Length: 134
Image (tube, rainbow, N blue to C red; front, side):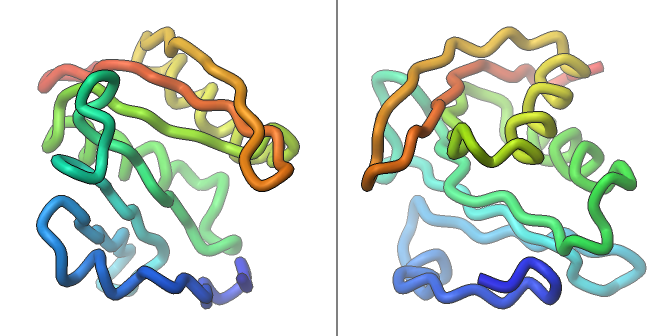
């Protein structure tokens, strides 16, 4: 992974262009890609708890802390209202801080569940969005 230029090695990335229920979204600024969202739904989400699993959310480092991520979340959640599951490694302080600010701005209180995945402490947040967030 290279957060400076957005280059990633992700062995199932092609699936997001091929399989129903796995959808890539690109975040553009002035016609140039600056980030992406990888969304899981249908058979790739746990329908008991979430309609959507936000698999990945990324903004190129030089475009972070400029409101682009929150704007992308605003548009995304309005297009896809429903129950979400999002996770971050607990030691990924910028991601934890970003998502807490997103939840606060939408007045959403997520239900949190901590797990260990591949030896990493991860916190999952479950919440519901509505079509008209403010």
